Image (cartoon, rainbow, N blue to C red; front, side, top):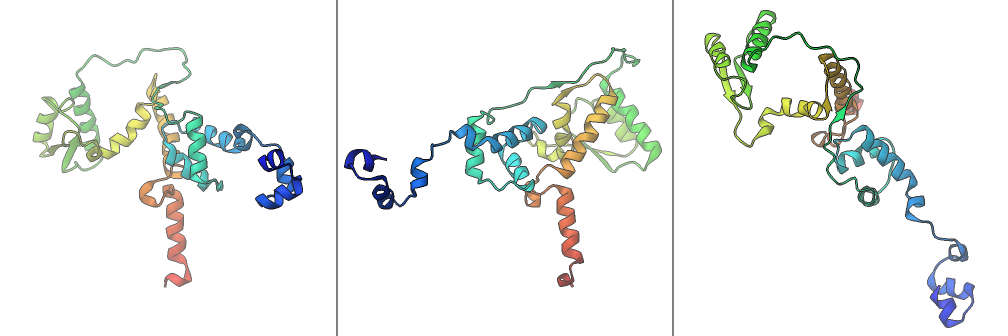
Amino acid sequence: MSLVAHRKISVAVACRAAGVSRRAYYRRPESDSVRDSAVIDRLQATVAEHSRWGFWKCYHRLRLDGHRWNHKRVLRVYRQLILNLPRRTRKRLIRTERHPLGVEAQSQSLVVHRFHERCALRRPALPHVQCAGRRCTRGVGEDWCRTHTIELRYIQPGKPNQNSYIERFNEVLDAYLFDDLDQVREITASWMVKYNEQRPHDSLGNLPPSDYRRSVEKATNSPNSV
């Protein structure tokens, strides 16, 4: 403390003048890595499990887990760990012995057409089909829709949110390199659990859908709600 060094006064007098305890004067300062070790551990674990989440998703998840750290402190650690840089690399799943898929060469439009035919056998046809472009509908797909009186809709250019269901699902498709459909099913099942039970949603007050549903049910069943 400069008062002790320059004014040549005792530690007790200097502490009283500065409004600090003598214990604080003698305590050695901790480094940021030691002081923020708990924040670092939890933040790194969250990012490792949810690599596509940004800062606010991670922060609200930590709050839901019971950690009451101030967002400024968590953001400082987040930046120090350089977690604010893009993390868009694909994960390669553990590979087993490769077996070629027994699918004959055919156009992508024909695959979509046959998928629609199978769906139509199980449930009533939808009044319209919405897609992001003409790649999978050109030719056979358009003819199939006209034959079954199904309206073909396209989203506006630069408006991926109009096709939000598949855009959200693309978080899975863009994150991994798959070898077969079993891997796709396994990863998407895990993703759905995380999406519904762990991922904070801005539109739900930064709660996962499952937590939000329980809060609504609790409020509905409360005697004060009558």
